[in-house]
Length: 166
Image (cartoon, rainbow, N blue to C red; front, side, top):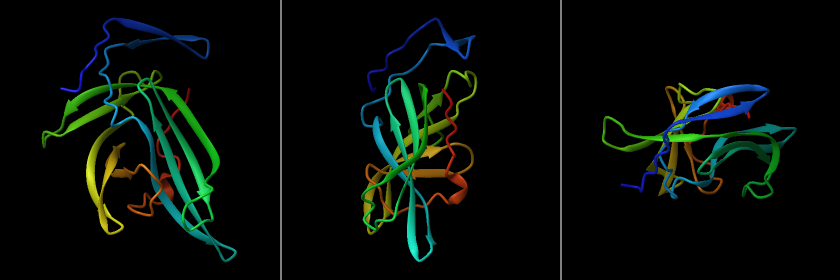
């Protein structure tokens, strides 16, 4: 399908002085999922100046990172980093009930439970159809795009929605 690569066995990972054992069976994440994706969190006016908040998620074959960015520029230029986190990750492929390809994200500290699921989709926002990475971490889909767009807002409660601790 996507050139799945399987690793078998157990991998010991040293985290904070404790040895965690993580199942090493993982699927290779296709290149179209990897890279940098932006999610629009919200905007608010502070002292007559509008502030726009974004998340930036960088997905690599063995690592995922989450950064919180903000700007006052209406074109979303000059995004300023506020805080972020990064962690090792493994991915497992699966088909959902609608036969769509999804990937579950596993972290070494949460070895048995997936922290989130991702899939590619097409959404209509800002007047045209765009490819989006759809992140599901529970009950709601959060949409990410290849560049910052003021579309599909997550809401202020999601500024730290993907908890990554390395």
